[in-house]
Image (cartoon, rainbow, N blue to C red):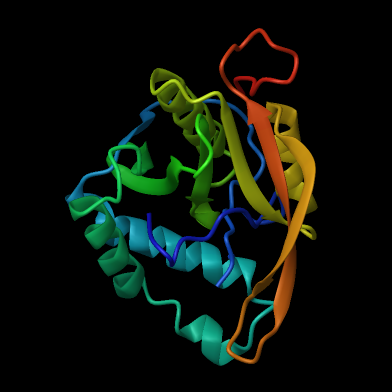
Amino acid sequence: MTSVCPLITGGCNSASKVSQHSVGCETGPMSDASVRTARTADVAAVGEVQAAVWREAYADVLAPEIIAAFEPHAFAAAWEQSLRTPPSSWHRLMVATEVNQVVGFAAFAPTDESGVAEILAMGVHPEHQRLGHGSRLLNATVDTLRVGDFTQVELWLLVSDELSRAFLEKAGLHPDGAWRDRVIDEHGGTAREVRLQAQISDPQEPDAVQPL
């Protein structure tokens, strides 16, 4: 959807360019919380969430001047362009809300392989983790992809992000053996990622994504 999306970082102790998301650990449902398709009016809030997620996720990985460049307005502009001119009808952005506030987001898109979708980005604001938003985002993403007859979902995750990996493996996503080193700064620094995947065509299959 956009080249500035992160995928998975963060975890239970708070509250990639890398493909990273911060879901945090979940404690269960809460009232006045939901997930819906994003609107252009949401992009400023999504930018705020993404900037907060990246600043926390990369505080010990990137130089301070790079962290300082994670500006909400830049992320928001990219999301607005993505919503106005999506590459396909299945490039989607969803948001998690608490009361009427956007507190998380998830972006997904089809891959070049038929029936396979990739979660490009998924993040929950550090101040709103551990409240079930990550679970709701993942469940809504999988439900939406099933409607589109997708049979598999995948994402890339930092090797070092053990907490998010535990969250995702609980949901049924597991490493498939693929890995890559992604450049994360202008000096050529890299971070290793592994790919997780799951079948989503039949919720009864033992290797399918399970509701959280």
